Length: 421
Figure (cartoon, rainbow, N blue to C red):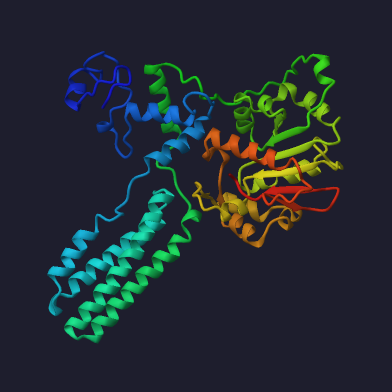
């Protein structure tokens, strides 16, 4: 393992002999992969993860975003790809006589079951699951071609039926799974507490991580704002369904760079919330952009903005739903970290009728199955880019912008961004 301080490569024997320190510069190692059980990480790996999620230390990120980021990179590789092809062909070739045809049959059956299970595994990422689905298709083609030739050679119709059926089944299963990969749910390989332990260990040895955000502070005392500032308003408001995302955007100066106010539906930041709302209500042309998790609570964000007196009850302002929405997830070709829980399923079934009417039947079924996706599963860079794209795409709402879908009646318009990046 290379030392992140001086770059010297230290073997296990050398690290052990030097009490977990670099042989050359004596810098302590934060992690010892050989002593870790399920998930093994190294100092260079952790350092690169921090650099990558923060875009080379230019963007702030949350601890939960780091959890998702590490989970994605540490996902185990499954028995997939083409490593199985050579032994499969060798076994098939050397047993290609009638009395031993059962051997390639059993081996083929084992491979089909293995690839099918891996293509559905919640412990793999979408790329690996897709690899297993493709392996099923390729395996089916080999079984089909080889089985036909073999059955002709031994003049056996029974063997022909067996191998053709197995080959077609493998191709069918691989094709079906390939279309379902992006909607398969996933589970974390490790917990938030484990990541926090790793962070504590890392910062104890290497100093504070400057771009990681603490939990949002609850500041009830109103901040003093210059009256000259409060005389103005904003043309845009971004409303988040969590204080964590609002804090993330503010920390990364999204409000300055995009000339907008940022608030959470929970009232963050509390110290300037009331003053900011007073300023916003002065602008009749205000556009509101909603950004939220794809779960029952997040899906209800726009409805709350429309019906809550603390927000925009009886107002004709335009609201653009940036996402996440089920339709964006269902339509995407890029895998997202989809989770599932009974609590989310129950909450979805209790959504108000007004919200249910704004969703497609497929979206309702997706939510009622308990599935959900959190915004913090995306990197800060992607969240910022998607939000910027949504704001830019809404500049001309009267134009033919295919990225926006109008939902609602005139005077109470809501637009939904159809793609999350």
